[in-house]
Image 1 (spheres, rainbow, N blue to C red):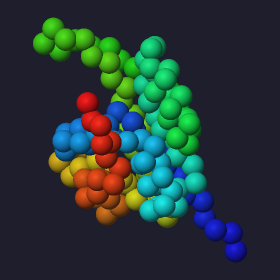
Image 2: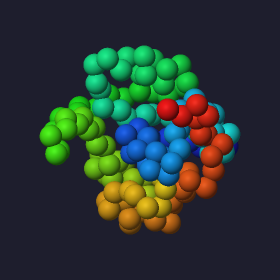
Image 3: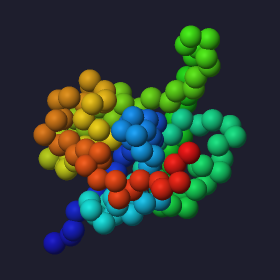
Amino acid sequence: MAVPKTFAFIDSQNLNLGTQACGWYLNFAKFRVYLKDKFKVEKAFIFVGYVAGNESLYTSLQQAGYVVIFKPTLEYKKAGQRYTKGNVDGDFHCLLEYLEKQRKLAYLILPNPHKFSALLRKFRPFFFFLNRTKKIERINSA
């Protein structure tokens, strides 16, 4: 009997901002090892908005074992500040629905229970919150 394969689909922006909202910074290399050890994740697809100048970040994610998927970004101004956003929550919603119907959705890993898309609420039985472990925290947070 074949062992089922486990894949992770990661919204890097929400993961990064969610852990920062908890007061800590994610070490993406440690997180990849954590996914492999704790959840037996064979492939981890990380969705990230492409921003010119961040190539070293993308390379380090690939070296840590992620399959990097680039998403288009949206630039906007808020209170005179310029921001770049790459949101994939809506993209994940249809994937989560499909996996749930196929009985292949195991976990929905979220940074913390206080901030996540309303689109994800219906998947609450699958929630696993990272704020319960800091094994993947970056020590030299700056």
